[in-house]
Length: 196
Image (cartoon, rainbow, N blue to C red; front, side):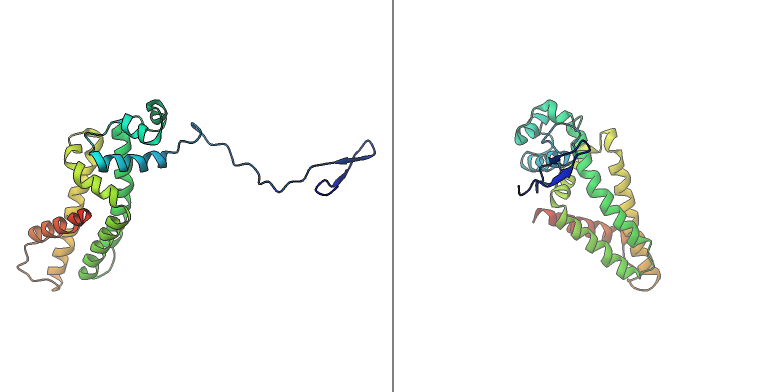
């Protein structure tokens, strides 16, 4: 019989075994079936963008997915945990790339160009997370959970200003350049593009 190869039977005779083309079953997933943390984060982004962080509730995110709040709490213990995950993903990537550029042997001009390109790449590829950061970071800074945001703001400022100073020292930029003013101009004009 096709699809049923014969197999030797230790007790004699012939035994058949069903052969199918069905793939092996996927490994069992932990947690509740059908609910994935990445799906929850994607839905949360949409709700945060549409209504703002303050106006968004865990219930609204759960409703967007057709989940109960308890199903959502299985993955994230609060709205703050959701936005924290979104921001950390964006900021860890951004600052990892920033640090690599700032500590490289490239010229100050190439470092500055690299910092710009990485920033615009993040704006393009993590647009929603950047938008959430831009609109919500000032309010989140008051919460202990988000203390890292203030530290990263200081690090970013120092990194860009150091590159500008290095450019002055090496003769790439004018010696009378107000590095603090230039940094603030760069920061504000670059990050506002997320709203375009």
